[in-house]
Image (tube, rainbow, N blue to C red):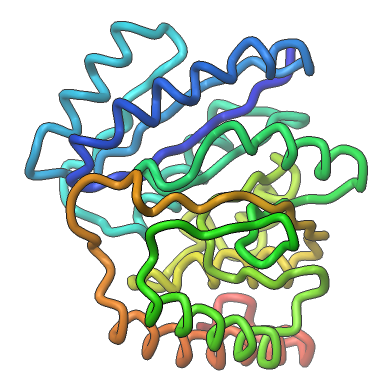
Length: 263
């Protein structure tokens, strides 16, 4: 049976990560009927609270849950690279990788719609997008929604990835084959951007190696999150704008036959 690896990068998410793991396991039987065995990997980024212990407890409760613990804090960038490395080591062709935020704002039930789009339309990556007609956002401050909308238009203008409107949402599903291409092109740690803009970096580098994208609607439930946000909005926005220009330069260098490792 093929496998779906659900990676949950988290830092200080003690109130949220256990709830999210439970929600994933509610989808296990449904995924099994579609021919996929579910594996859940909680990536603890050296949290200062009880996040690691919660994941360990869930790994004792569910035999399909694994803890992947960082000994030092590596940020979201490090979490993405750890997920990529683990997936390529433990997975094989035909397997799928899901990444989502570990703060319980993304609901695992949407994985079924994402999987349907991935298989029916022969995509390499499907994004749970905030900008589909069926999407909705609950519990996000108006100024953050406005900034996200402005960023969407900017990224679409600068990066121009076909079939992509949501460049920064972390809830995505990827094929083993496209992640393998990513690592072959950009190395074992393909993500280098330290800020939350690393999600956009990962997306664009997949585009560079030929990924085909799709999007499905979902409901972002920020009101489900317990605890404070770790995102510094204005600093993240500034870095994201700069990162978009840097990423476009990578593609231009590659098209001219330059080093694939130039950043």
